[in-house]
Image (tube, rainbow, N blue to C red; front, side, top):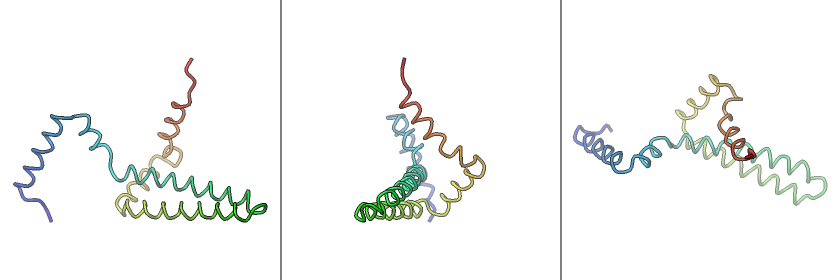
Length: 124
């Protein structure tokens, strides 16, 4: 249901007041959205699944309990992946897949790679 003209006007006034009172907070709220967080958790769940697979393959022959822990990690990662995929919805998934097609899979992790490099870079 679309907003009435009065509701749109009130909403614009609230938004302008927020920008005047705390522009840094308003910018953070505008730049962060559900797609960003869900996309981050999708990447994390893929890494968790691969880690669980590695734990399972490494320890299953020596300890069934440790192999089972790997399976549990894989299951939790799949649940996390599915939950965040549903959170993104169809429109969000189309945005992600479109950006992967245009930027390539290597550039999808570029921001994460850059942050990790900057974090662990030695300062002389």
